[in-house]
Figure 1: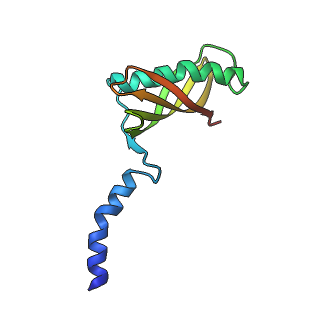
Figure 2 (figure 1 turned 30 degrees about the vertical axis):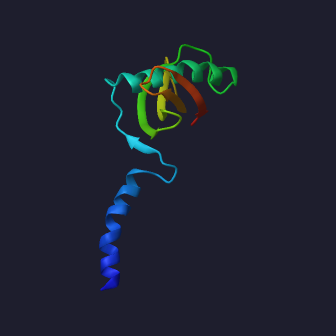
Figure 3 (figure 1 turned 60 degrees about the vertical axis):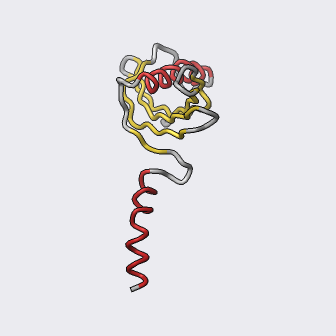
Length: 120
């Protein structure tokens, strides 16, 4: 009987843990109408693409966003939010997968790229 009570009481905690990973990141839906998300992604791409090209991890060219495959957030980081994006970028027939983390101030007025890596 004690096992059954423990199992029933642990179910709400297990379902919450599935939505939030151990680092506190929460997967959220991509919303192209959300100006804070779009602003953070655009600012991150504006910095990450030239850095990846300079590091010879992305070919020269006019790379642009093709698809957002995942978005996660880590709220309340220094009075703002960190957003992690997994995206596909395109340059003519070439495509690449890129992961980036952007820190935003409260309200999304200031965005700063804090990490990027190529997933190819």
